Length: 392
Picture 1 (cartoon, rainbow, N blue to C red):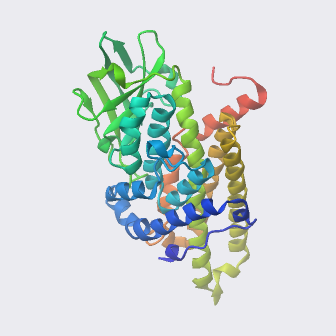
Picture 2: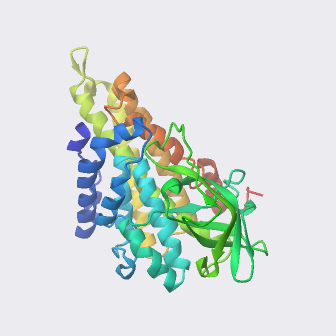
Picture 3: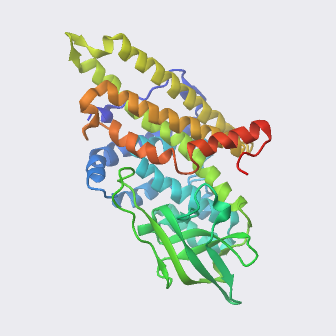
């Protein structure tokens, strides 16, 4: 496939702002995607299967929790390196990036940030290698954009908690060894607990018949009087601040990741347009085709710099949730528009598995919804601008 001969667009020489370490990390993940993901990803999507063997390979490369300190199994990298890893993984497929994003930002991040030292040493090194797979339970069947209305409960029974409720649309849940779950305690305060595979009353039915993220495990988390040991409570945070901070980390990764999908679509379409002959010349020579490419590259370039600046701010611990929200919303919309426009450049060929556009397009229809819908992120920005809360 043409994607193997990938030429990443960098119209404003953004590479000059990356360190040698950033480029080395990106290059390693890019080579791995070329070698291990692109040759198999269409078959995985067509058959609705996740290539589980890639999990340990991702762990070996340090793609899980790369910003976690080495003491706990992470690579000790900065947030720009994390973003570049997500970018290259999503160039391969959003499902691969989603798996790594959940493992890193929604499981390892809260255990590192809010867990006890015992929890960190118990779980993080094995999550970093992929020996353990994690998932994150926040969204419920009736509560998505409004997590504060969750009905999942943990009840204090003295020497343990009882967990009851259900979570839905959970990436990794059918294969997860552990889950970071958010539930309300006896006082109605949101708390985080670590649930382990094998606990009686804990099941993870798989969600099937998806048209999007087909090379990704999605499922539910169901809790029926699950006994949670007291030592599995994340003691370092209370309230929605806990899960929201996790989502900020994940949204940051998405803002970078989707650029990879857009860059893949752009590169494939550009190569195709130079080879596809119509009316005795390449379609790259037609004005409307060039208009598409000019607009696509402009939007990719803007998204690249938005993500880079956000990475600088996050490294300095200055990135706000509203800034992360804006980048997630803008960049996902950009990537989805790019997938659609580049698909049109390929005409009918663009809907086949020989090219990545339709697969990216379907995947991005999920990405524009999860971790906060496009409309919710607009309201987050609106609140930050005006100070007026449109949510209530």
